[in-house]
Length: 197
Image (tube, rainbow, N blue to C red; front, side, top):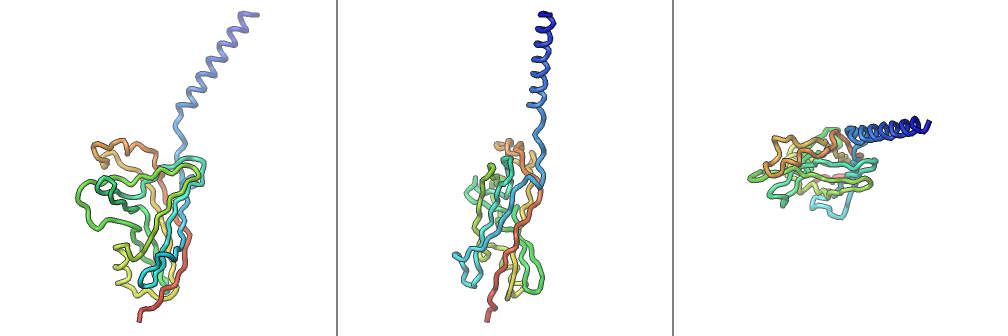
């Protein structure tokens, strides 16, 4: 009986060890849009432009139970210039016409380009100030339409990974990070544009 009990104990411990190893080596659950970040858009009247356009704030919030890694755009000149080009803005005028343009994109690229990687732990948030008059695409929108009256603005983030062949030779490891992949949209913010005389 004593030999059998010892054999059963050893077998049980070995099985538990194998199961624990199998569990620890199983791949982490894939990120889905439901476990991704929230995108919030807020009006900020402090940086009002000369034309009376309000300023805004775009905030990425991790309300989930997993830490997130987001590719939100591009870095130029070893990070000296940062552009959240993976975030687009959707501007709708009083007549219901909508324009979509990047929240921040370089007008020209010369030299090194790296991904704008944002680590967003559980419970953390990251806020970007947004002044439409500083966005190079906004004048092209206003040239096509005379914005006046009630308008709405919404933000959209499209998360994607960094392909290995697109990472710089000295920064290949950036392609191995577990990027969140999916699309998320913010709330709409309404504002009034005064008609130019």
